[in-house]
Image 1 (cartoon, rainbow, N blue to C red):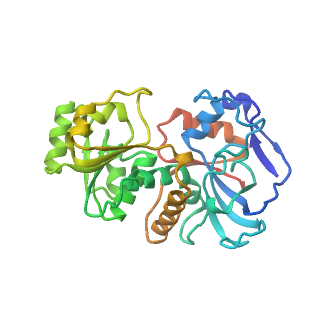
Image 2 (image 1 turned 60 degrees about the vertical axis):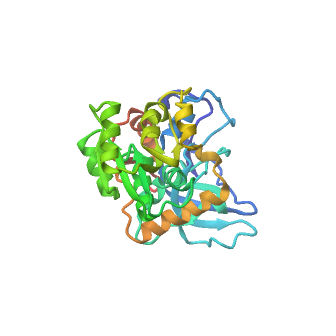
Image 3 (image 1 turned 45 degrees about the vertical axis):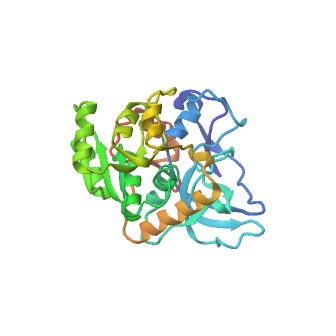
Length: 330
């Protein structure tokens, strides 16, 4: 098969290689997917560049955890997924060396979900890391039906999915954004109210949130914990919760007593290590949402495997209008 891989970490153009490798063979409980699209997430390029300072987890790595395609072989004991099914997968390169930047990928069957017939290959390849993170961020504190959920950064990959998931679950959703373009994205995702925070002081943000939710916020989906926690706690209801999947500072300070007196619940979310049943439920719910009309993610660029270094550079640069995806059939 054709694949892209790296054997050392660094700049994409220096370390990524495209060439031939042996076709993988599924073992017991595993599924082999003929990959049509491979999704690229910020975490994929950070692993390649060693942004986390962890080093090479394996001697050779095929990057990317998310992808979509046809099942073309199954291992012993697999009954839930059949050969020929359209599927998407997640976690292909979580604690495993070989991800979806290849014509074939082998993953445990529990990491594979049917792709609805109305959903594109691109949508399937975009769901995994951001969609499952968003689902966990919305639901980690319990049922949100009838509650007020505030999604900080409601136009980002996780944020826009969180807006859609919370709305689908019956919550009233407020999203914060920092531009008019982002306002349109959050509104299209289903936000009941969109609050632009660019140029506002913390006091002004608190005032405007309380104008939209006079009784306070039940649950926060948080993208920048250090930057926002002092605002979050001031508008959080007694017994409310904050689920944070990212922070703008690695060692944040928190207003401990204010949070303690509100009996606040704080959840810190690392997508690789969510409980298996939470990942499974998230995947099933995301597919159901696609099947019933959710538009999924805007896709900005679709590049062939040979241009994987360019694709990584686009993700690292940021500012793209839509997700970056590899086409493994080109």
